[in-house]
Image 1 (cartoon, rainbow, N blue to C red):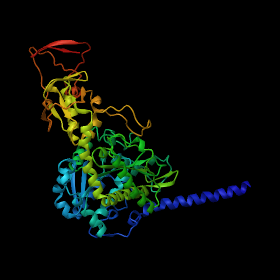
Image 2: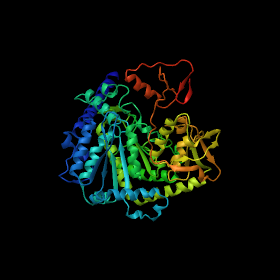
Image 3: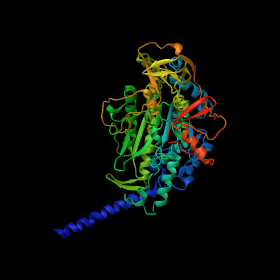
Image 4: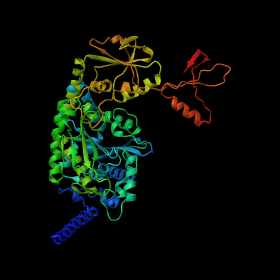
Length: 569
C-alpha cells in the first residue's frame, strides 16, 4: 500500500512539475493575440510595443523611461494623440497626460474642454445639448509603484487606441475624449522595476520566498518620500498630486479609473465596494452607474476566463483616493484591484500567477471601461449635469450657510490651507467684519469666509465635516479627515440663518505667500524667532545651511524690537 502511494505521489509530482514548466514557459511567448483575443486590424505605420521594446509587455517590468519613450513615439505616429507634460516628480521624472480622440476633436480640443466644464455650472449647463458632446474618460495607472501591472498594460492600451482600425474604434474616438495618465508614480514604479529585473532569473522562479518577491522596505509603493499618493487627492501635499489635480479640474472627467493590485491569493476586483461603506455624500445614482459599468467588466473578464468579484472588501468612503475623489465631483470613480504577481510569476492559491496574465486583466478592464462609457455616454453626461444642479439644491437645504476660518497667530497656516481649497475649486472670500462663532473671534485681516452655496458644495462639506457615526464599523480605509482640524486652524460654521452678504468681501482668486522680514533694534546681539509658526523649521534649516550657529531658548524671555517689547516662549 505504501509503495503504491509513493508511486502515485511521484506521478502526481511529475504532473504538477510538467504543468508548472508549461505555465512558466509560456511567459516569454506572449503574442498580441493573447492580450487582444478579437480579430483586429492595425495600422501598419504604428509601431507595436513588442517591436519597440524587443519583448512583449509582461515579459519584463518596464522602466518609466521605456514606457514614456514609447508614448512619445506613438504621439508622433498617430494623429489621434496629443501629449503634454503636466508636472515632475521629486526625482525630476516627467508626468505626462495623453489626450486621445479623433483628429477632428483634437483640433477643437480647447473648445470641447471649455464646453465640457460648463456641465458644472448649474445655470449654463441647462442649455447644453449633451447628445452632441463627447464623454470624457480618465484612466490612471499604478499610483502604487510596485503595483506594476497597471502601467505595464498602458503600451498595449495605447497601441490599440493609436493603431486599431474599423468603424468600432473610429466611432468611439469621435464621441470620446480619453485621457491616459500612464504612470502616476514614476519614482516608485522605477524603484520596483529595477528590483524585479535585477533579482529575477533566466528561469522564472514562482516561489513566494524567492528574493524577486521579497522587495526591500520601503519598496516601490510610495513616491520618493515614501508617501502613499493614493491618499493625497484631498490633502494635496505631493508635487505629483498638486500637478494632477489641476488637470483634473481642467477637464472634470465623467469617469476615472484607478488601476491597482492586491494580495497574490486574490483574483480581480472592480467597484462598487461594500454598499454600507459608501460615503453618504455620494449620490445613490453614482453607485447605480458604477454597478452598471461593472457589468461591462464582468462580460469582458468572462470572455477570457478571469475570476473576479465586486461589492466586497473595499469601501468608497474616504474622498481622498483616486477612485473616490471623482465621486464627490460629479464623476464615476472606479477602483480596479488585480491580484499581484509582485514579479514575473508567483505561486498562489489559484495556481501560478503570471505577470502577463495580470497585465491582460488590467488591459481588459481599461477597454471595458471605454466600451461602457461610449455606450452610456449621454447617461454619464446627464448625470454630471444633474449632480452640479443638485449641488446648489443640497446647499440650500443645508443648515450650514457658510464656513469661517482663520488664524491670527499663524498667517502662513492660513495660506497653506487656502492653497488646498483653491486647488479644489472652492470659492473663498475675505471676511469683512469681526464676528464671533463657536467660541472663536474672527478678525477680518486674518480670516476668510466660504459660502456653502457653490458648485462644489459636497466637496466643501467633506473638507470641514466631522463624522463620528457610521453605518458600518469596519473600514478598509480612512474614516475621518477634517482638514481644518488637521491644520489646527480656528474655524466655525454659520448655521440656520441667511448668510449676511455684508460679511463677504473680495474673492480670493490666487495666493501669494507672505514674505518674511526681520525686525531690528540697535544694538543687535542676536536674532530670535518663535517656533510655533508653520515655516519655522524651514527657516532654521536655511540658517544652518548657511553656516550660522543657532541655539534653542530653554526659558521664556522678552526683547526690544522696532515695534516695542516682544515676548518669546
